[in-house]
Image 1 (cartoon, rainbow, N blue to C red):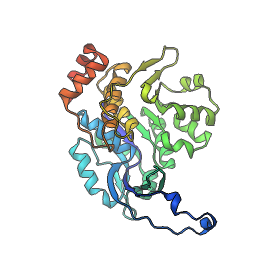
Image 2: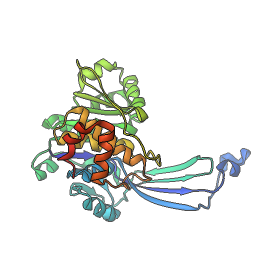
Image 3: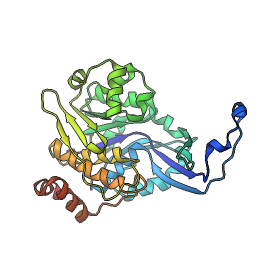
Image 4: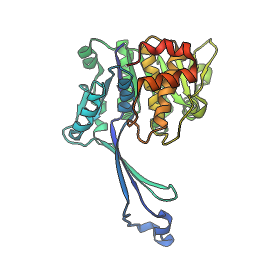
Length: 324
């Protein structure tokens, strides 16, 4: 099964300030703020929803196709993804802009001051999917993740016009988009991925009821945080899959991306929806136990042992032959 993943490609620059931002603010001078914070730490992490999902699929033994836009500074990141089984040949490299960048400083009270530079991500709207499909011999599914909004709409419309199955995963961009754009992204999707809040936001902005959304998509997949995930199809009973037990909770960033990676891998292995969701939940558990979205390791024996403990030996036997 050939799966392309479109979405943002970015690096995160995370710093910590040993103090409180509030102590540096002068109430009657807020109209002319000019501050510089001397920070203690800097962590540069690989990020972006599309590489996060592709990395997870690669660790499970698949070869997902990454589609997005980056700058010429992407070379080291590309090498990392290549080593982890990701096909990066369809990444558009901008000749004028840097890869998107998230720069964030956190103080002792966990308040944050951050900026997001879109950079090359704005050129994702210029990417056409048909050349990608031609290069790899066709596409069985395209996941359309959070990206330049115009790119998301273009990819969705191209999938519809060319008859390519697609999964809608608008996530962070829902806040920016209006109801009409969201209706364009969602209608006709084979899969719709959201968390609970995003699911409610889609209903509010589109004016569609939950039942109407189910009539417009093949499968609705809603992550429920610590409660796991709910899978719904029109005319069928919902499937609810719980999370595997955590050994520790280090950082929740990237957990949703890891779930999608595991779920899509399960679909690629032709597993039933419940089993695919279990693979996604297990991979998400590895991410929440690790600081960073692509810093976890998948050790086959350890993964299988924990999977069997969470979902039973019969379930583990069904995925055993597929797991790299």
